[in-house]
Each structure stands twice: as structure tokens, then as C-alpha cells.
Length: 212
Ligand SMILES: Nc1ncnc2c1ncn2[C@@H]1O[C@H](COP(=O)(O)OP(=O)(O)OP(=O)(O)O)[C@@H](O)[C@H]1O
Ligand SMILES: [Mg+2]
Image (cartoon, rainbow, N blue to C red; front, side, top):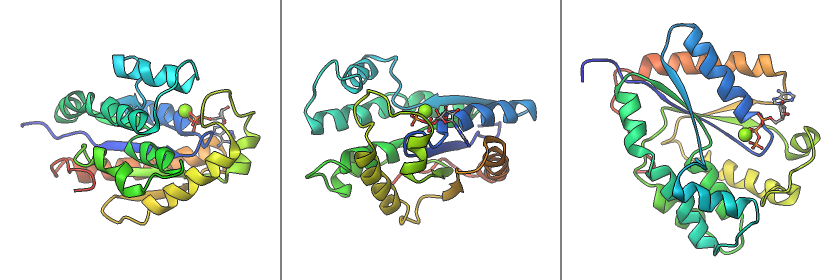
């Protein structure tokens, strides 16, 4: 491998925290500063597995809870060859949700342990940086009505938030908590600085394996 690898940067947070907004702004800022950067999002609703997930989220179909969890994980695994290829090409990947959302959402359902939920994603490419956009779910709800998709209720989102808090206790992952209650530009400034730092660090290190 001759060129420096790109960094795998993930944005996480509850619904409405500003993940998609900030992912777009980060990709744009990195490109403007002359760095190769691309966005990815999970679930990726364009693949065959993604279409099953999309139909489930839109409540057009029902799936058993374990099954849907494994589909979300499979949707990440099917992108792994592409993720690795892009990173090796020196492209920085900015990812809108990753395994952490998958685990936080399923484990917010009754009868699912964090450990069971994490297992299928063990060994995924490990993000060099995971920024958690911290926003209290009441404030998130103020950013517009919750939609009609599955999971978009404030009670469920509060439990999801608790699961994220548990996942953030794990120091094997490079978590940074970002106060997302500020303006879009203020949040962006922090995200950009943290990302630039990690891009310089990551280029000399191999890509890790998540939760292993
Ligand atoms: N810092 C901010 N202050 C106020 N409003 C914001 C801020 N960031 C984003 N928004 C607005 O809040 C809404 C949700 O933002 P966005 O879609 O980026 O969040 P998200 O985390 O991707 O949500 P979802 O989980 O539903 O995909 C949008 O209308 C966006 O313009
Ligand atoms: Mg979004």
C-alpha cells in the first residue's frame, strides 16, 4: 500500500441530532481543504437487504426483531469490501450511523441484551473516530415532528439514548461527545477539527476491528 489510508469517521446520535446535516458539511469542508472524502450512510437502502430494511422502517412490512437486527448488520457487512477499498485509496469516509445505532435501537426493545446485539457487528472495520451528537430527546423532538417511520417516538428514543450511553462506556472505541444543541456552524467547527486530527493520526495506522 503506497498511499496513506483514509480515516473512517462515524457520526452517531439519536434522531434529529443533526447527523446527516453534519456529515454533508464535513465532507464538503474536507474536500474544500483538498482531502478526498465521501459520505456513506446506514442503513444503505439501495441494496437488496437495504430494501427489506426500508420497507420495514416504512411499516410496509413486518419482520421478526432478531431478523431485522441481523439484516441491519448484514447491510453493514455487505459494504465492508467497498469501505476497505475506499480507505486504502486514501479516501476519508464520513459515515451517517454505524453499528452503534444498530445496537442501540435493537437493545432498546424488550428482551435484547447489549451483548447479543453487538455480536453480529464484531470485526467490522473499526471507526477511527465516533462522534456522538449529544442532544436531549426533548430538544430533538422540537426540531420538527417525529415522522411516521418505525422507532420515531420520544419514549423509544429515550431508551435508545440510554443504550448509547452504555456503549460509550467502552473505551476500546474512540468516542467524542459533541454538544449538538448549538448552531449548525458551531457544531461543525468542532467536528471538523476532531476529524482533521484523526485523519493525520489514522494514516499511519492499520484499520482496526470493532469490538474485538
Ligand atoms: N444545530 C442545529 N440547530 C437547529 N436545527 C438543526 C441543527 N442541526 C440540524 N438541524 C435541523 O434539524 C433537523 C434534523 O437534522 P438532521 O436531518 O441532520 O438530523 P439527523 O440526526 O440526521 O436525523 P435522523 O436521525 O432523523 O436522520 C433538520 O431540519 C435540520 O435542518
Ligand atoms: Mg439523518
